[in-house]
Image 1 (cartoon, rainbow, N blue to C red):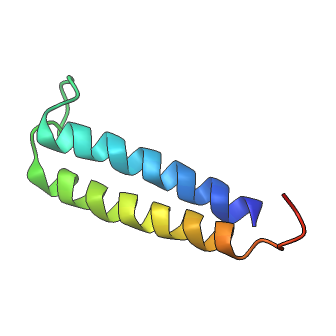
Image 2 (image 1 turned 120 degrees about the vertical axis):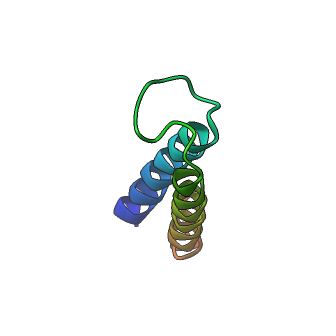
Length: 65
């Protein structure tokens, strides 16, 4: 469960960075900056990361905090 939650959180963070770079909101000089394809890939990564984290959260045993 912890592995899925950690993977989901990391994937969501990567997705946010890709969205920021793809839309040009994060400054930089790279091939990702200003390229809308990376913003779309970031949205997908963010959605998968959130879904993975939520599935790990819901599958935890009820008697554990």
